[in-house]
Length: 439
Ligand SMILES: [Zn+2]
Image 1 (tube, rainbow, N blue to C red):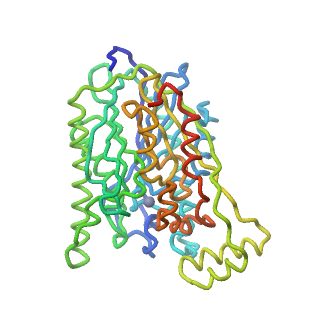
Image 2: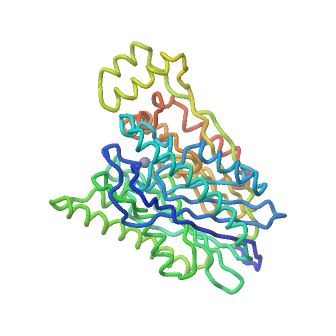
Image 3: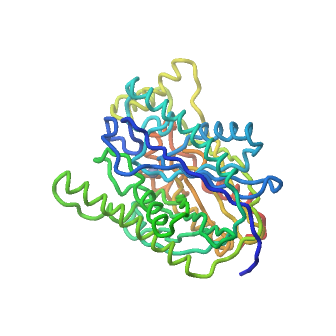
């Protein structure tokens, strides 16, 4: 534990990203129509750390199901042109709420059918608007910088439950970072939790931040003047425990019950944040050193043309996915054999290492990283930068099921990953983090 009077330049900014028109929502393939209204407004937030001569970093948090790789790259490039902030110093995270607009090419095959041209045009329009919004709050966060003290500690929160295996592994840690200005005011709070943002189910079609949105709202209510940012850890195989509870009869009753649970989970998170704020925290005296590295994750053996034809005969989402691949082959396009997977890290001197894994990462990764690195100085995040699909551990890849490979079709990936995916990701984290963080 260190204690110091170091002040670091911190800026926050936020923008309401709620569309004022109906739009298809992402996350549940069963939804077939545009949104029916707004339960809760959704936000994008930016956090800038460091002064201009310190090589500042920017984190964005977006209430959306998933930001495609090309989306993050484009926003980062635009920001680089305007502010000089390089790609490695920009990280974009999303809450994975299943009650926010579809973005262009984000889980593009989720509906197992083409999206109507008019609906697609609305999605494309929103996607462009969101890029502009994110760019503007990143710049505002830089403009809003003022000296703050940063500290962090780790709380615990119990509502995430393994959704594959009863009693299966979960990561209940709740890392919390506080940023306090020179007047003693809480400027920003950032907390991360490893759970799907899916309290509301596919039977609902309203815009909402789900538990992460309610958590942000509750934190800001409890600490007026602060900006709360929520990001998501390795919760790809975790759901809120309320999703496993029995539901009442009736559409309205189910809706009311789920919404009450989403608020309850958000309140529980905010409560634990308040509890952590009362406890001692570890001061951070350096601005983070940010790095990004890509690793190619190869797919398993691709189907033959005959194989694709057999899959096409299945109909439904599997058939649609196979038809699309047959179409690509017919047009002389090759089917990709791997994905480029970005992994980012922030290291605050020797005090804290934060890992930003991309997309939907299962809990085995954070549990393993916390064994291989000093878990008192490690924060493992996921749902960052890109949204290529589920990233299964070797165990889950072998087990199969939705997170093991079944979900790949909804992301438009040709097939499941080849064995070895876990080690490739873990090795890259080892390359990124200084050895001083090893366990
Ligand atoms: Zn998911």
